[in-house]
Image 1 (cartoon, rainbow, N blue to C red):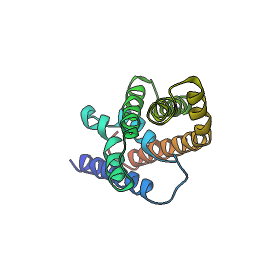
Image 2 (image 1 turned 45 degrees about the vertical axis):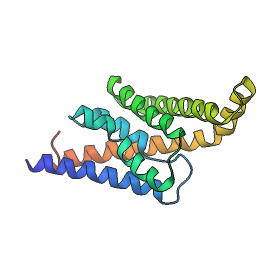
Image 3 (image 1 turned 90 degrees about the horizontal axis):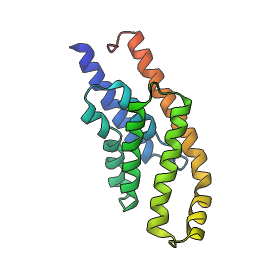
Length: 163
């Protein structure tokens, strides 16, 4: 029972830290949400909750940052990343990188659709201007995924939570 409570504390901590990480100054797109989506796909038993775990801190922090139509594409991308994690045999650098690519493509298609001319020039312009953000996305996704999975493994090792 105590280990289940500890696991709930761990999940609550992830949510709080994710919210804070989006509200404090940070490089654009360097955020823990992809890591949380992949983590929840592998480490949480309640599948309905784990699908929405990345969306909860995202939505709460968006209440402060601002909500727009692009959020639909952002939220959808993290739900798809969760399902990628669910079907992947393990979460490794390749899975994290593929998640970053999925986020980049889906969100930039949304940005193009909502704010650029609906032609090939608009599409190319949108994706070209997004490349600098993609570097931060990859770095943030790798960093936070590593931290989340290593921290969880350490918590299991010291018997804070059950394996």
